[in-house]
Amino acid sequence: MRLRPVDALFVLSLLVSANYFSNALLELSGAWMVAEKGVCVGLLALWAALQARRTDGWLIAAALALGAAGDVLLETHGFTIGGIAFLAGHLTAATLYLRNRTAPIAPALAVAALTALAAWSLPTDRSVAPGIALYAAGLGAMAGTALTSRFPLKTVGLGALLFIVSDLLIFARIGPLEGSIVPRLLVWPTYIAAQALIAWGVVRTLVRERGRLRG
Image (cartoon, rainbow, N blue to C red; front, side, top):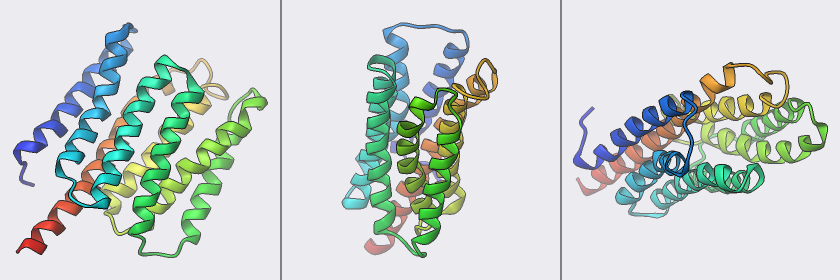
């Protein structure tokens, strides 16, 4: 695998993400931590945007940018506003995957339904379960359409599934895993791995195809 100069942004994203995680484990806080959190996926969005030439490239860049916005908004405006930004990102990504669908839609719908059901079952406070299920349906739609798209399963498919794992761990934190250290240790690593794998799989596929067309 040959890295190009623009891929320095991708590597930098991973380094900043590792630093953010270590600082979070130390329970550091402040505006600079919020900014650092946003930079992690923000760098992936910039990396994708610099290589975007057509609609598919801009869609993945937009989905990543909405994820970065969600990371910041979760810290500054709370769960609902941050969740809306993430949901918009999931729907943007699902649009990309639907444009590149190579398998029947039924499995994608099943993943969306199962993800929503799993998320709905987790919170102890049942009053928040419907809103969580609605968000999770969008998350599951993103993952399901990723799995039925032409993008590589080993990167994009795996990343989409890790995104589900990360968010279900968040919901479990207000349910059966309340007080457990497991979400604290796994939510961020699974999330940033998800975003990085999705970004790499989609962008590199589009770049390779563009190269073949030029050739």
